[in-house]
Image (cartoon, rainbow, N blue to C red):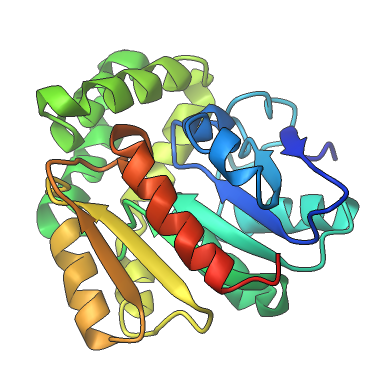
Amino acid sequence: MATLSYEKYTKPQHKEWIVFVHGAGGSSKTFGRQVAAFKRHFNLLLPDLQDHGNSKNLEITKDNKISFDEIAKNLITLLDKLNIKEAHFLGISMGSILIRVIEDLRPEIIKSIVIGGGIMKLNRRTHLLFKSGVLLSNIIPYHKLYQLVAWILMPYENHKVARRLFVREAATIKKEAFKIWLGLLAELKYKLDAYFNLPHNKPTLMIMGSEDFAFLKDSITYSQKFPFINLKILQQCGHVCNIERHEEFNKQSLKFLLQNSVT
């Protein structure tokens, strides 16, 4: 089976890696505002998840279903192929969930974690939104449905750039793949309920936007349950904080990553 498509940036003097994990409907382009700042200090790996970006050639199971374990294993396979034995992981939105799964499957490969717009739990409203999306996907063209979901999660004018990027990238996803991923998100609640009572076992920084109405409250609760997990809240910022407030996001992330590296 083909491996994930990816971009990488390396320098001989850099010994440590950062793996960037984008969210559902995104691609490695999600991190365009991070590359210049981060490649000064680290080797970078930016994969496209299955069915996203340029990773359109991976097989789908016969029952047209996919699991977070399978998606995480695709990432681990890529790291093994590139002989990356340990890395810092930076995940946005659903990428935060995949990092948790990788931590379950291969904890020794993770050195530290940065989460932006993390999904720590699904509240009733967001769970209902994803469930409704599955039903509406049989009626509404999928790209229109994604536009609606993106607008609900990122409604303000200052969210517009992030919203447009995700809508543009999602438009390249095939209809069948879109429905599979939407169904995966809709069934996510019970997995997250279990994770919510378990801390990350690696040094972790969570960065959230003050206007991330779907996920901020639970991220605050999670950080209060486990005070050793760092939480930074960016003011007047929505869900995709690495795009909307990229300078502050980069500053906070790099400070944390450099503290947890030997670079």
